[in-house]
Image 1 (cartoon, rainbow, N blue to C red):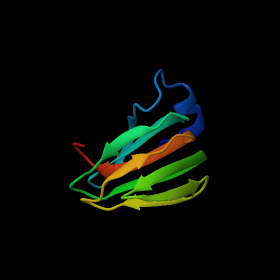
Image 2: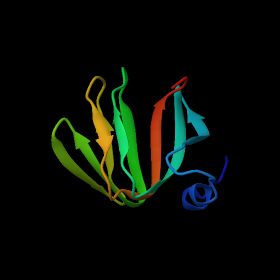
Image 3: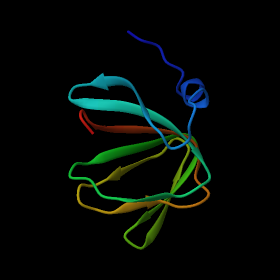
Length: 101
């Protein structure tokens, strides 16, 4: 078993919005990144992507709807659905997606 402090790991990352793989489970990567309030551009995947806010908040624009994801909540970005991170998102984000992405 590996014990990892998610917030400490994110805090020590050199760059905002650049995720690092901290582990794998089944056929999925477990990634962590830090958000700094700046927006992140629109993206679409051919797989479901799990976004879990560990600390802070994330403001997502899904199609044209603004979705607030608070600390301790997750959002499942479905395959083929465009999503972007809006300004004002900050803190620690965990991402779970298929290995190779």
